[in-house]
Length: 150
Image (tube, rainbow, N blue to C red; front, side, top):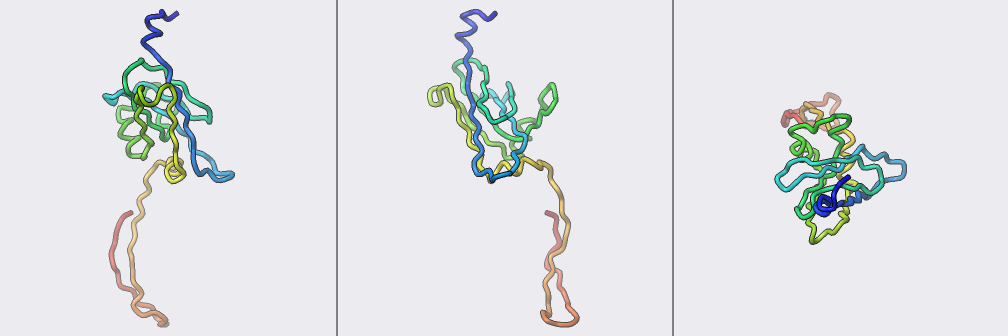
């Protein structure tokens, strides 16, 4: 059992994650809330399942919360590049400052961001952009404008 001194040094922060712009029948991606200390060290995470999340942290310091794709899944240990992965996935980042936020931290995830978390992989598309030189002709002729990878 934790002593009173240990309990005085720790506190609980409740994180409320809300998704804005969800259309009827639209599926939400599997999302996780992550907490980092001010040096960027990963501390804890929880799956977002539509209810408030409680994180037990040390009282006093500032923290950074990130909401993004579930990069941990069933892993026991967080990957070393977790913060970089979250940055690349455009995870929502919210600083927690005790004097401002108190015990509750609301995080709003807009509908323009979270659909990208459903398919967090990059797909390369190679192609050529061409211009039709003789519109209406029976024998179309094209000129290559550029080639590229998207």
